[in-house]
Image 1 (tube, rainbow, N blue to C red):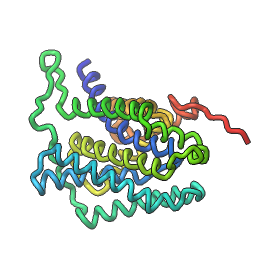
Image 2 (image 1 turned 120 degrees about the vertical axis):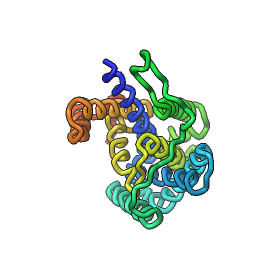
Image 3 (image 1 turned 135 degrees about the horizontal axis):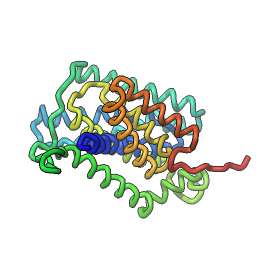
Length: 295
């Protein structure tokens, strides 16, 4: 019983990281109608910036996290402005190829700057002791608690921002109809840039949490989590913020239980098999909505 609870908690923690990454994917797709496959590499950049701030500059972890968020936010705006903005009217295939190109550029830049040798990421919650439950039979680590709390806070703040703020309402308008939004005086390009900035800032948070939970840091750190987070976004219903969170957490739980009770080697295959089954039953994802278009 303790083993099941332990795996469930670990799965929720891992799924919370996937959910934060998936929020970036789903926001960009929901508003700009494009898949930013370079998002996983922005995670890696955020983790490296935090690592350098703590290990090389000796700064407190909180300062390192803020630096990572700031750098990734600016990076997201630059990527959108240089790589995606000129392709606003281009076919989706051209945008997809560009996203893959940006991804390779970030990975190889990281290889040149930080080299290929693995680095041990420092803990950001050293002072936080594990919570002991059931007389010490079950221990919940500090990073697990912080990760889940971060996911809840990010989800709540993002939902309130999208539904209540003027910028959030502009994002929803652009998501519905770019041309109509522009006619109503909304700066479509600025709104899309803000979306990339928020998504990239969230990627930095996810990168720090990911490397704190799994301390090995290499230039491809964000590649597989990025793919899984995209899977989580599709699983929950891409374009849906609650769907991204639900998909991320479910994906984390499925992966941890598959590793513990079926096979470590086939856990990824099991995760993607579950996704295929869900999409066969409900093509729009768990919380996705079918949209009818007039032709």
